[in-house]
Length: 239
Image (tube, rainbow, N blue to C red; front, side, top):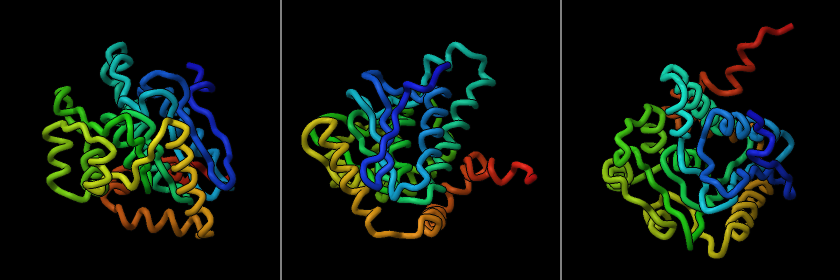
């Protein structure tokens, strides 16, 4: 599948901006996951990364329609590819900010929370861990990511065991996201880029940022590290 038009990459000042393109749901198929990972890998030289999306969805989770068309043993290409994407973000030598421009459900919610900071659109969209409603078990690293990134036990219960849909205002109040931005998609992206630019301006050593991130969330890192680009590069034979 052609992945060239699934996301775009641009530089805004010191910020590496990745945008999931189109008006669809941005379902995380193996192809889209590969495209995002390639876009993340293209970030060297930037001071910070922002991930955003066009349309009413940030991401509506894994591509279940794709999963229904392939043998069950191929489903791991999606879940393990996403595990690798989380590893890539945790190992990235720069601050990361998610611009949650619309609904972020299931794996899409996890993708947003895999960033260091999250700016969410105030007027539209919600965070929604839909697995309990859909009758789907969550994988181990999802549970660990939510345990590490959602500070309050009652909030984790409401998200995972009640399937509550959380607006930006509620997510800020509960400490799940950092800010709610007024306006449309462009305004949310601008707010996230401004936040990222402020972090880039600090001039931190990127490798130190990455190592601190792994140390702060060691349980998540332990479950994903063997699937990331960093592990793949280390495993390649040296000539």
